[in-house]
Length: 209
Image (cartoon, rainbow, N blue to C red; front, side, top):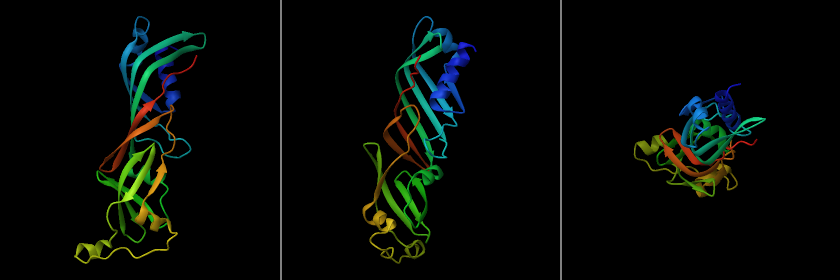
């Protein structure tokens, strides 16, 4: 196998990805490392699974700094100074990952926060923050019956049993950990967009001998 393919295979294995695109491409990377380090390599991975789930990331972008390739009898190994990543999760993927309380069948994402949609058609609006890699959602407005609210009648969602997970959400919010990402990724930022979330942080792309 050529050095070009070995580098590609090493990164795909680390990320458990279906494919990875490089800039510069692996062939250029393989030639350059014989004489000097590569200061910056950008990658876009597709088909990257999330640990212990059936969810595959919609998109994973990585930037690796100070990249070198070491050669041994077992083939090339990557040394990477620092790698940052940005992973895109759609609201459908989040609905599969987030532990939705009983009575909630899905969530949607806006720039303002998550909206939890109950089976009764009542939306629960929340703000979202990240605290030590834990996602925290807090109620941002009283939950209303949509049709009545639309025509100007202000009716809050009926009281639910105190122990209900939905009652917990509407009164106090909830928190949860996102499942583990590949390459020892550590999440330190969460950005809300319309219809999706981007989580970012650092990862480890170095491979052993």
